[in-house]
Length: 180
Image (cartoon, rainbow, N blue to C red; front, side, top):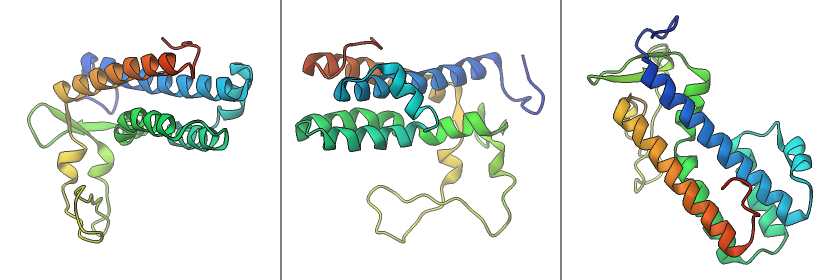
């Protein structure tokens, strides 16, 4: 099954895209539930207050709230560690939500079409994790081209991390387990 403007996308691509979007929604709901638990509020109120925030903004709000409420530092750090996993995939989520897709350079891969429409003077650059600031390496083809296997792996990583995160929150009684 293909869709207008996205002829390279199969039903499997769309299923995996949907799964990624839903895992992010699950993480956002869990963050809202933690916020409600920490302040002793109804989760519906927190959802209303944070409904206009994206994943990164909810993550920052949660971090600030945990620090403000004097949650033990090791617990704050552990929560942030769990939330780094989906955060590393937030650019993929953004592309799923806001891009049409084209075939990638490598066989069987797809990439957001914004890559092909950039003016010649504009190129996305990415720094290697241990690079000296200012020394960027252009490797955007490798970072924004996805095979079905890579998308499936992303879904699996998000799911496994969410399960571990939910279990940790139950262990420290920071969440009532609404998302588990």
